[in-house]
Image (cartoon, rainbow, N blue to C red; front, side, top):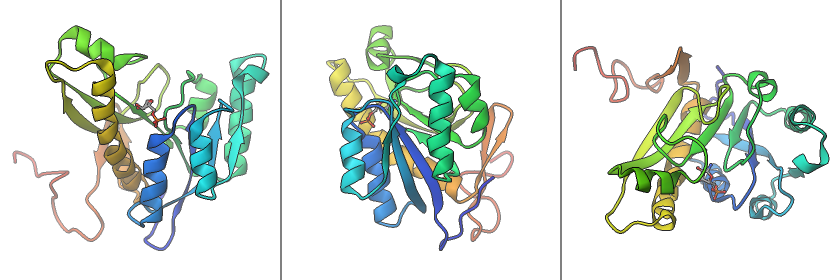
Length: 225
Ligand code: GRF
C-alpha cells in the first residue's frame, strides 16, 4: 500500500461528474494541511460539471473525458486511465462520478480506487438512494467510503457515517445532511489511505494505528475489549 510521510504528499486524481462539493472538501483539507495529498488532476466526464470550476479556482489541472465521444465503455475508460496515469496519480478518488465502471478500469486501479456513496452500504446501492431510504422506512442512513470492486457501489468499506432520517425528511433535506457528513468522511478515509494505514483483507478493511501510537488504539481495540 502507498505510504506518504508527513513531508511527502500522496499524488491523487479526483473523478467527478457534477457539483463537486466533495471535491471542494478535499481541496480545502489539502490546503489547510490536514489531508496529506496533492490533487494532481480533476477529471470530469461532464464538460459542464461545476466541480471543474472549483478545481480551476484552486489552480488544479482539469481534463474533460466526455463519455459521449466514445464508441463503448472500454474506449472511454482507456482514455480516463490515460489521463490519470499521465498525471502519475497513486490514488483515484471518485467523487460524484455518475458512470458505472467496468472491470477494465476497476482492475487497473485495484486497491487504489475509492468511492463515496450517500447511503450505508451494502444497503441502497445505485441512484436516488436518499428517496429509497425514506421509502423503506429505515431510521438511519448515511455515507460510505469504499474501495471499488466490480459491481455497482460494491467493495470493501473504509469508513461510514450515520445520519438519522427525521420524520418530515424529503430526499433533498436528507441528501443535504448526508453531504455534510460526506465532507468530513472522505478526507478522513483518504487520509488513512495516504498514511498507509489501510489494508484489504477479503471484504474487510483493516485500519492500522498511526505509527506514533504504540499498542492498541480506538480504531483497533484489543480482542475482547
Ligand atoms: C454525493 O452525494 C456522492 O456521495 C454521490 O454523488 C454526490 C456528489 O456530490 N456519489 P458532489 O458532486 O460531491 O457535490
